[in-house]
Length: 113
Image 1 (cartoon, rainbow, N blue to C red):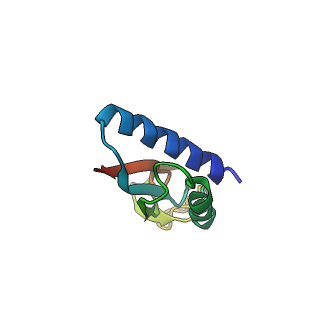
Image 2: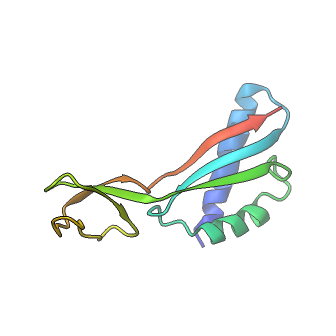
């Protein structure tokens, strides 16, 4: 489960930011996870509950924003929703498209006190 290693990286990033800001505690963390990122949201939620025990995130509220996949066809410029990286364009059936969103895996915000 690579979600646990993602959680450990999140904890490290938050700890670094907390030190730089001089804040004492984290009250909320907001994550953006794209449907095409390769992260299983349910596994990440479980890993968060287990991986943040005894860390600065243990009592923080966790908010996960799920970003749907979206692509633009490079042949006809049609924009469309995608569930995977191999969805053909519904207008021209071309597989030549550019992913516009859905690959996100980032910390959107950290609320500290």
